[in-house]
Length: 287
Ligand SMILES: [Zn+2]
Image (cartoon, rainbow, N blue to C red):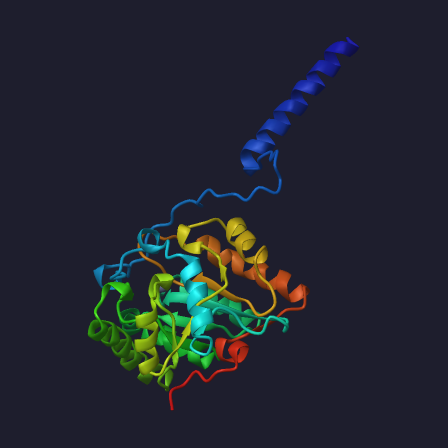
C-alpha cells in the first residue's frame, strides 16, 4: 500500500515538473556560460521598411568583413582624424547607434536613454532622417549628438571620390535643418574605408568615428548575446557600436532589450556614459 502511494506521488511530481518546464520555456543548460546564438523569434517588419528605407550598400550581413586590422592601421596613421576609442585611463564609455532613424527601434532606444538620463551619439542615414524628421528632432531635444552616416548607407569604397562626397554632403544638408548645426562627425557604413577615402573625408572637415566594441547586433542576436558582446569587451574609453534601425532582414529586438541591462551593469561598475565629442574631446559642429 505504502509503495503504491509513493509511486503515485513520484508520478505526480514528474508530471508537475514536466508541465512546468514545458510551459515556462525553461531549459536545462549544461554549459551555463555559453552565449546563446539563436535569433529571437523573427518580428514582422515595420510598416515603413519599404524601398525608400533600403540601405543602398546592402545589409550589414552582406557587407561586413572589412578587416579590423585595416581599421587599426588607419587609426595609427591618422590619429587626429580617425578614432577608435577615447582616453584609455578615464572610466567613460560612449554609446553609439547607427542606421537610424526609424519609428520602431529608435524611439525605444531613446526611451531607455531618457529613463537613465544618458546622452548618446547617433549616426544617421540622410534618406531615413528625411522619412522620420520628428525622431531626429527628438534626439536633439533630448541632448544626444548626431553624426553623418551618408545619404543612402552606401559602401563608400565602391564609389568614386565625387560620388562619395555627394553621399556625405547630401546627408549633411538633410540633417542640418533638423539638428540645427552642420555635424562634424562621420561614420562610414560597414566601417569600410581606405587611406584615400579618409583623406578626402578630411577635406570635408569631418572627424571619422569608428568603435572598439562591436555588439554585432546586426546579426539579429538575442539580448543575452548582445550583452555578452558588449560587457566582455568594454573597457575605459570604449566606443560601443549598436544599431537603432536596420535593413528589413535585421531584427534589433535583442539589442534594444540588452541596452537596459548593459547600462545597469556598467553603471554599477562605475562607468560614466558620455557622447562622442566628450569622450574624444573634439568639436561636433562645423564652424
Ligand atoms: Zn550602418
